[in-house]
Image (cartoon, rainbow, N blue to C red):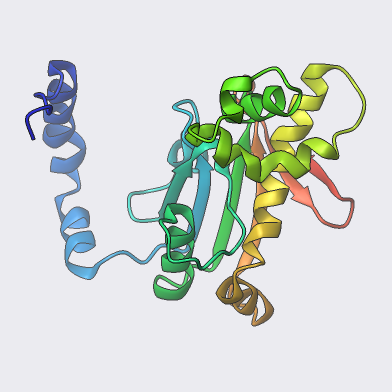
Length: 215
């Protein structure tokens, strides 16, 4: 591949540091993971945002979470049309092959994807309306959330749309037959979370009160 380039030197240095410390101190655990395969108890669908550090938030060890990241932590509706579906494939593998017990959708504050959807739906981002925009077409998944936003200032409405991205993803997960069956058989539980990056807060959606509640 002629366009590939050597890894930046700072990443090479960090790798050698990890290999000499974390890996060296846990060789037996890494060997166990390699030989026994992965057996995660939970899948986490989170945003690609570099500030969202899933394993750090929960203090998770390697091999504990099956993590899938995409723009705005969205799950599309079930659509077996034979096309490319990265998120749907990850969900299928986690539920039917790994048989995770928990599936967590994790949203966050200041989400750029959600802001893009907000501006697109408000008519302020014509570039996202183009059929050639991968981000725009992906954010179409969240359009129903925009239509149901409460009145208020832009900041309040964007925060509400961030949380709507979690709820819409949970609703769409239940359109997958194998997810619905696993939930109905009590083999799988779905969870919706929202993380505040600035203060480290974490909120969980409570179906009884139909709102997000802080831990």
